Amino acid sequence: MRHARVLAALLFVSAPSAWAQAPAAPRAPVALELVAPTGASARVEPEEVRIGEPFTYQVTLTHPKDQRYELVAPTGEGPVELLQQTRQRQDSASDATTTFGLRFSAFELGAVPLPDLTFDVATPEGPRRFVLKGKTVDVVSTLPPDAQGQGAELFDYQPPQEVPIRSWTLLYALAVALAVGVAAWALVRWWQRRPKREKVVPVLPLDVRVRQSLDALKREDLPARGHVKEFYFRLSEIVRGYLGERYGFEALECTSSELMTSLRRLHTPGLPEDALMRFVSESDMVKYARADASPDSCKQALAFGYDLLAKTFVPPAPPKPDAAPGPRVQ
Image (cartoon, rainbow, N blue to C red; front, side, top):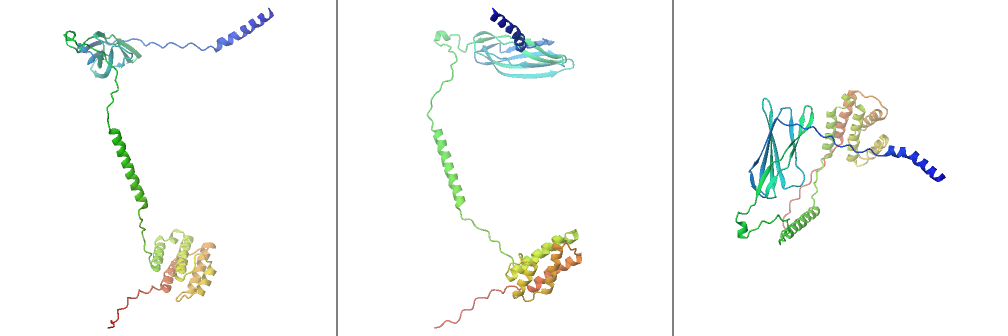
């Protein structure tokens, strides 16, 4: 008895929570209000059709201009099948006319009812719906009237059946694809292994290259734009590169003292040593001691580069012509 009371109390306590957690029942869809056009007509062309042949079902609706009728495509299985549908609208001064053309095919003999047509209507008051009752079409056989007397029968439609046909098209296509792939592979291999010609660019003489570098530096006019330090860096590299290539030592990696010591050990006819020493000192002051240089000083430094090239470069001797052949000894 005591256990029964405890069980009843537990059921009483858990019942409200179970009711609260129960899912709400789904709401039924809201049905749209019906509306009718001011005029509706429908006709079937032709009125008598043969089974399986297409025919046209034309529906014409007259309605106010502020309404729009859209056909809901018929769904579901039936004795007819919808093949195509069209819609046209013409507005007049007082109302509008919307014409729907539906193309059907019937697959039953006798009086076959067409499906009811449902239209979604857009009105200023909101969406509405209009349903037009379907008409009936007479479907006749494709056989002549005396078919039964002649022994002909009307068979129902049969599903598609697989008919094997021998064809070598697929094998031919595979062979062509294989041949094209082999040819493409051979072409790629030949292209990769072909002898490559290296383009040889002739090296300009030393004096021509140095003069071109000096001319390019002159055209940039770096001191006039406030880049004095960059100007001396560029000019120093040109001068050092020329001296290193002219006398055969690594001038770009030398310090100023190492540069002068290396030059004194070499045979350097025509080298303006004092002017070079002044240029090296002035360049070091501008590049590393942040000294200022006037535009005239920069012009003189650039002129020294041209003067150094003119005093120290010796053009290579032209090649000696071949000696004339001597008299033949008899």
